[in-house]
Image (tube, rainbow, N blue to C red; front, side, top):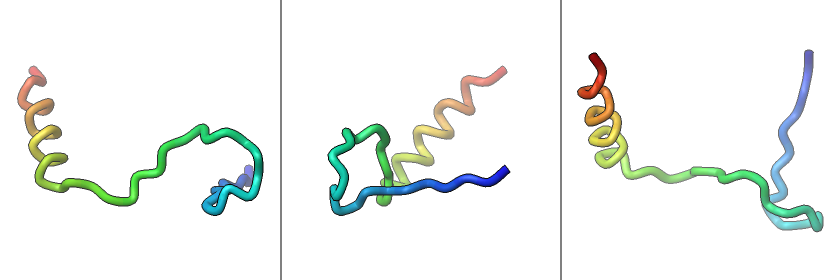
Length: 42
């Protein structure tokens, strides 16, 4: 099976935005959130 993902960076099409692309992250905040949730596991 093959496929492709197309991203309209320059808004060339008239299609509505239907996804969120994360290209920057607060790594300290991410680790804190991840560890907080992992601590809740039995």
